[in-house]
Image 1 (cartoon, rainbow, N blue to C red):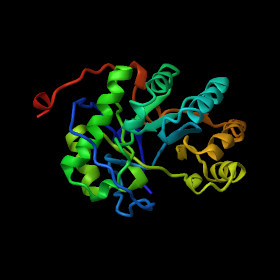
Image 2 (image 1 turned 135 degrees about the vertical axis):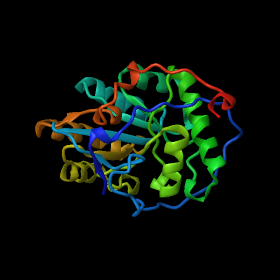
Image 3 (image 1 turned 45 degrees about the vertical axis):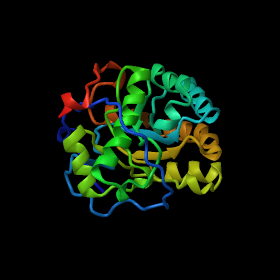
Image 4 (image 1 turned 90 degrees about the horizontal axis):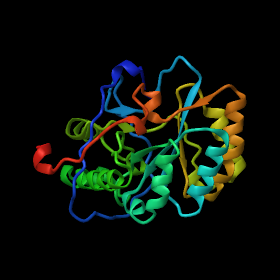
Length: 255
């Protein structure tokens, strides 16, 4: 597991481009890669912090009913989270995407169609990522500044390539309740509360009903332990995502 100091990171930029159609394929569940290098700024699983803070992250949305319910829970408690959104869902539910951004949460890139990117060429990987960044930029006025690969399936070579080409670090996680297995909301909450530490990046999926049902006790349990909630950018010491200014550039300008 890599735990990096905020000093390791550089300010991130991101290109917003129009791209070819997506590449869709089925993929199995894949464990975290075992080749994560120490002090590798391209790959983050947790962040060393001096204050008791965690990053709640939610993958695979937005969901038309579960994501708004989760946003209601976060708003009632004054908490921020990071949502790793799938591009083809972004364009399907744009109002929810705008709400996520408007309510102070961060939006990360989770590819266009959720393929196993470890099996894709560099060009295909960048197509998946750039198309999603462009869709999010058009709706919110800013692109994602971090990326999370579907299934966590992304080789070290690909992580370094993405960091070089798009200045996007790959965000993985340090706490995984395996909520995609649908173990029940009590189990999801228990696993998160047991595993969370200061600086943890917690993985969740807001397309899972049990996960959303687990969040009130999860949020309140962590808060009662003195934990604060920050977005991934905040944990990394970057400016709040909503305060950053970006502009779209073409492929020609990028290259």
